[in-house]
Image 1: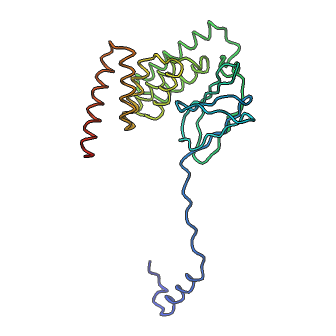
Image 2 (image 1 turned 180 degrees about the vertical axis):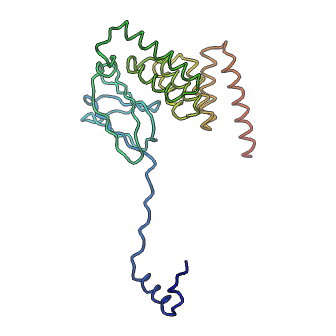
Image 3 (image 1 turned 180 degrees about the horizontal axis):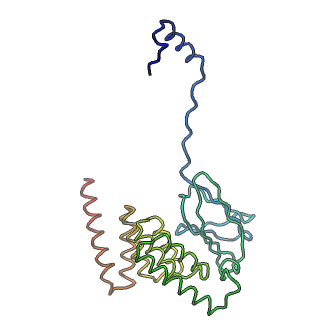
Amino acid sequence: MRTEFQRVLWVPLLGLLIQAASPAAPRREREPVSAEISVHTAHAGCMVQLDDAPAQPAGPQGDLALTNVEPGGHYVHVRCPGADEVDYFISPQAGVILKVPQKKAAASNAPQDAGLEVAEAHLRLRHLAQQAVQLRAQGQFEQAVKALREAMQLDPKNSDLHRELGITFLMGKDWKSARIEMLEAIHHDPQDSDAYNGLGYALEKLDDLKGAADAYRTAMHLDPGDSSSRSHYFDILAKIQAQNLRKK
């Protein structure tokens, strides 16, 4: 960029001298793209599972570090001998170590509002689920997600709620979140064919065609009368075949 001083003959030389004497600008460090999760369990012998990844044993002190975790929503499942499974919903950020403290199964999986009776909690859950479906139909996906998250506080292991949340994310085109919720629905109900169907759709949108085919095939086997999963399955096989032909 020219300035009025460039008319003076000695200024260019002076500029070169100053530039040579100045320290080089520091390189911009590459921003982290993954997160780390530090899990503390009750004691040694506990198994820790992140989403659908293989479970890993905690260390002698009950600690386990999960590295290279993709930022965003995840579920951590902790299974200790003689105790019920404890589930955590977490949302780690890139470059940050998220600590997951130990908590008892009863505190994790019981209704959060202890003042609600069982019948009242059931009615509240049903109302929130219906509200979420209505909001979703109106395109208000964020509000629908909020209602379903609130319902999950009343029943964290309810596979139907996780599946409905996954459907909400599918409709909002949040494929990664949809995948996580469908996996969680399957975790709590391995016979949920609709969750497998939704998982297949999410994986297809994430360009994991093989994973999508596996999910559709499982849905088809769980519910042979469902024409939707069968149609999706053969469509994805055609896509895989076309993809393989392009690689040749």
